Length: 197
Image (cartoon, rainbow, N blue to C red):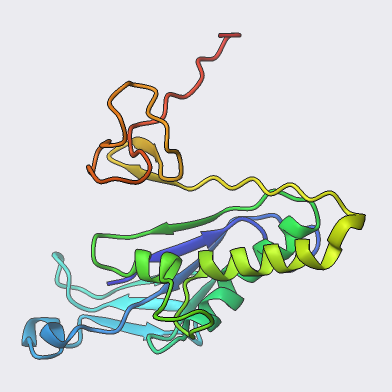
């Protein structure tokens, strides 16, 4: 139930440590109606911790993060907490990364990629909001600054790295890739060999 989002810089200048922020999705209608899910997880966002009360060992276990967002957190709050500090540092010339981690169905795609029903809607994901902020900044700079934006969007699944933006399949298999479909390839990336190759 808890996708974890990490980013590699904080809003503090000179602080480039990896920070881990946990967003817990609300329970689904099925989970609310199922007694098995009752009182499984306690979110203490003020203490930046999550307490798992039901597990295979039958004793509660707590996990502490840099921050835990309340289950009712808006996409805007997620962006402001997780992604905005990274975008600010990127606009200042540093590299940055936002990573979403979690089981299938925990809300990673919603948190990252949700486009929404219409432009400007409130449930846009952090990637969409980051694009908006980066391109607004580049547009404001106008002709006086030459801006180059390079974006990498990958998925790591079963120890394979997939380029989700590429429309080229180096293996000759077209764009079907791992998932099939018409856009982009999800064929594993071939990482360069070390030793000058």
